[in-house]
Length: 118
Image 1 (tube, helix red, strand yellow):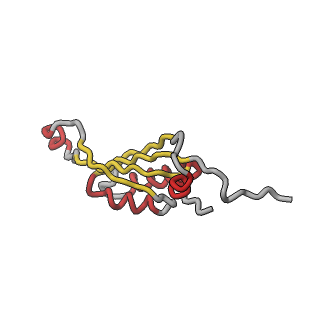
Image 2: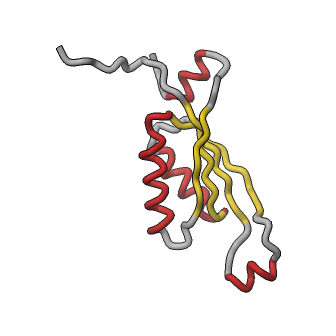
Image 3: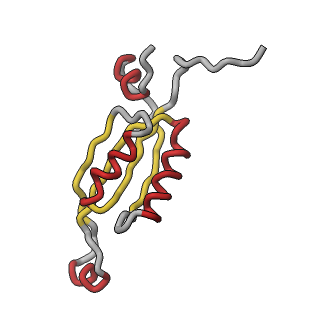
């Protein structure tokens, strides 16, 4: 008899941080929403380089920092999709990294964040 995966099994969560140019924030939030992401927020950020250096290099220091709660089992797939978008979208460069969440208070909150309806 083949092993079956328990759909209601506890799925670990991670916080995904995605830093992109501010004008690309909505685009990347839409990309992330394809992966059962039930919670995202965006914070405006500013780089640390001075304006003279930015002008010389033609860079923008106004950033969107997207914070998303994702399931650990989707992390590799999400990071690969983001890496592809960073390389192929015009002016769509960015960075992304995920850190584990050690706990969540409340079963209902966990179910919402992990997209677990059981």
